[in-house]
Image (cartoon, rainbow, N blue to C red):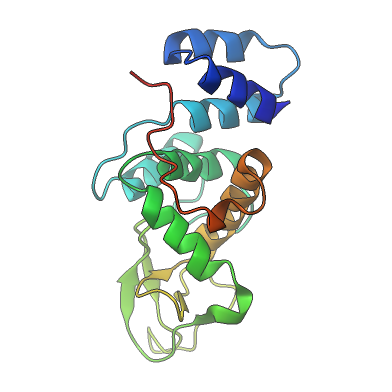
Length: 189
């Protein structure tokens, strides 16, 4: 149903206002499905270095833990869908999916140090930081991949994996093997 709605909106070049009305009025779609459709078809413009601001603003408005929930969050995953579909972050989100969604490439960062998660902007720490050994379940533990130069927090890894599932349900499970630009294929004027 979601995929069919998205194809209809994009194929018929239905603009954001009319699309929002059609989505909102649909009785057959859940609120989560409506959000996914709107996020995919009509992504907001997310400029340079603005993705963390979008994530933190969402967490603040939702009254959520600013460090993340360590669980799936549909709204947060839809922000990543918007980033994937937008011009500025499309390749970056694809890169993160390629690098961080293969468990054999993923590990915590050894040594001492601190970085910022490139997705949510919160400080994340290496295993030996803060004069203690970091708990592997800690949401501020830095994770790295042998295929990337950035580190990510655990919560953003969870949201990235969920975002991957959502996009796979629309574009098919092999969407990451197709390196055409997913950005700009919206009906936004």
